[in-house]
Image 1 (cartoon, rainbow, N blue to C red):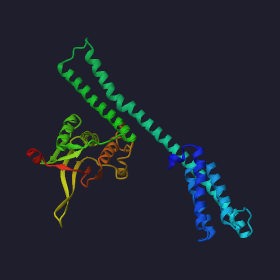
Image 2: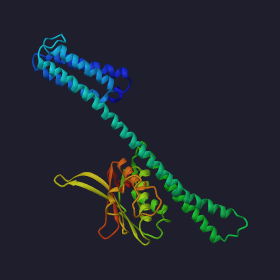
Image 3: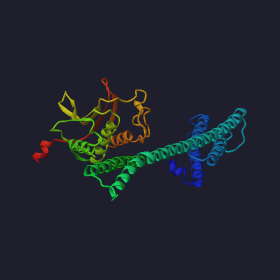
Image 4: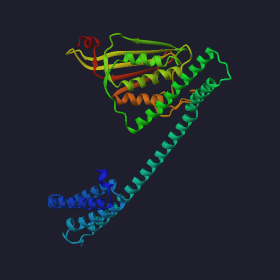
Length: 369
């Protein structure tokens, strides 16, 4: 409807005229059944509605037409602009003033609202620009510099490098490349979320396979941590988006590895849960529940509610980072109609719990097929 109103001024004038005309015709049909003041209220309401959607001039046209129609058709003597009663004259004047004030104030409110939206958009754009600039200047430049430096060292013929040194340089290149890829993926994923481009491709996924694949990719980042995987061998397949789930688990484990001390434990649990109607012994909702917890420092109590906010970086966190990892996780989870929650553990550390209400397929039944 709003798109129709915003097409052209010509359309808006026509809408204003037709709206008043329809109310006037309706009023004529019931003129002898109700008090004429009620029709005045109806005309006042229609002009108020027009003021919400139309520009000022078409609304003013509607206000003038409604005042004229009210006088001409509904105030005695009918079909004339003459008013006999002082009360009716006062009513007509007040009606016209109220309609005009309402139209002008509503229009000013709309303009203020648009100005606020433009200001907020500019502020968000500036924040995004600053964040991306910070990311490019630190999070991306650091691994790029490491890669260039290592390659430059390897290419210098006058340096006699031992095999051990070469292996270390290759490791540095690999580590920096993984970090660079992670940051670029986060920036691209946030762009996809912001544009609404995310369309999950649901298929049967082996969550256990995804967890082990991600842990293997993050072996360098978690080499000083104790990673515990607690997944039943008979875990069924779940209908989820493989790529999104891989990125979700990757971001959570990577986040745990970066914000917990050396020697900390990161535990990944996946289970199949079912809500059961015990009266009828019927499985109602099948769930995939993924829990990723650690025994590190946990989240600041006064900031934990902001953990999934875009660009939010905790005061106690180390410098760098884009503050996008957890917000991307939340976006990818919700894109698959799942939920994610975060809490600090009583004994220390934090726990992320992801719940997906999805179809599942037993591994045994798949083998039988």
